Amino acid sequence: MCLEKKNIIKDKSFDFAIEIVGLYKELVDRKEFVLSRQLLKSGTSIGANVREAEFAQSKADFINKMSISLKEANETDYWLELLFQTNYIEKETYHKFNRKSKEIIKLLVSIVKSSKS
Image (cartoon, one colour):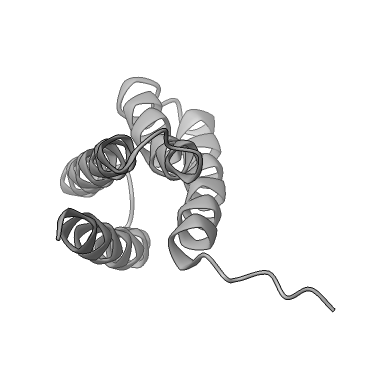
């Protein structure tokens, strides 16, 4: 029996991307195209860079990909806050996504820091 090791950041970033796509669709339905596109790009890029890091060519490459993922997560947090402050998303939606993005940011910070030691 082969047990595959759980990759928490891989799973969380992918699940988050799915939710970001859903939020993007809602925003587009309400005719918000510019900010939602930025959110879609950064929110889905987090997991894409985590996936790239899985097959990094070196430790430095791994750290670089995870650092890019961290930057994208921080950017996503920015777009979420901007959408909330400009009344495109409700308080509950903002807090739900903000909580998840902060969790991903904490995980990525931890991964980057521990990888550098």
